Image (tube, rainbow over all chains, first blue to last red; front, side):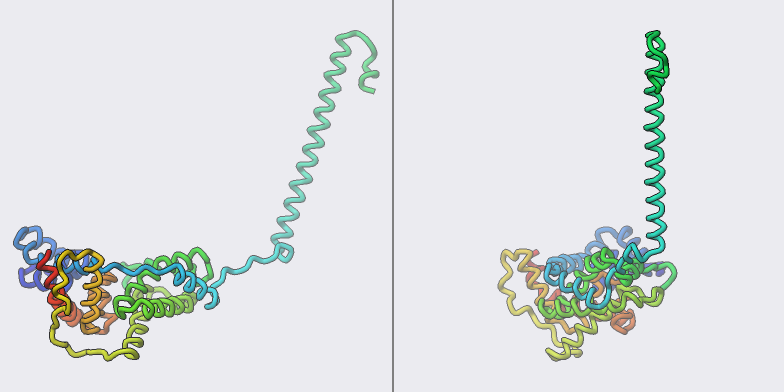
Amino acid sequence: MDPKMTAERFAALADAYGAEPHRWPVAERAAAEAFLREQGVAAERILFSARMLDAALDASPAPYPSADLHDRVAALAARAGLRPRPRRPLVKSPLAWASGVGWAAACAAGLLAGVNVTSQLAADAAMDAVLYQAALSGPDDTEVLG
Amino acid sequence: MGAGTADPDEVLVSRAGHGDPAAIQALIARKLPRVLALAQRMLGDRAEAEDVAQEAMLRVWRQAPKWKPGKARFDTWLHRVALNLCYDRLRRTREIAMAEPPDRPDPTPDAVAGLQTAELGRRVEAALQRLPVRQREAIVLCHYQELTNIEAAALMEVSVEALESLLSRGRRGLRTALADVAAEG
């Protein structure tokens, strides 16, 4: 980095790169910005015509791609062979089989759990009935439980 | 490309190269406006600029699967491709005046009163098109495309000093062409 920025070099930078520090060469930017801070109005005066031209250049708008151009470019990607890799059919994949076995096991476990819960509920209901009947001192337990 | 200057496009290009539709769309969104703007400002013709942008993007799709990071920034490579396409068209359609022509005043200096931004934009574009092509290229790369002086000089295959000279002369030419606008401002 240049340790010292002269007025001549500062003017040359503005002449070439304009008034915006982000466009100045990286190697000289810090020194130029320090010059700008130190010199204040005098430095701004040097930048004035560069700033005017920058503003004029920025008045020329960037063209924006049309939807049609966008679509054509996207279609070119496919034509150039850039396609997402197709997914393998599930039946051909060993993992799919493993996955199927997993689902089957889960279903079976669910079924068993359901049967178990149902049996338990039935037993609980029968026990309630026994206790109810016992409280009534009526018929024998075997009439209820069978 | 130095270690400290990681390529911001690297991941996107790699994913696009593997056919990732989201990456392809993102790359279009990121690069197509940039390439179109470069071509439009170099050629001054919308239809030709669209052709260049389309061809440059086709080369992006072909290059993406085999892109090797580390040698050059992807954006710099894309600028080189687009600039070469622009030069092909410039060579085909018009004489490239490499020699410095005398500064010419803008042919419509009277139409200054009440310039609206759109009109100013058209004036600037016209003045830009009248610059010698190398001066125009330097201004387009450094001002509009916001490349660093080192990147722009490398693309143009000139020294940084030569780039700076082209920029200065180009901006001076534009100032002369737009002097009436400045006087108005």
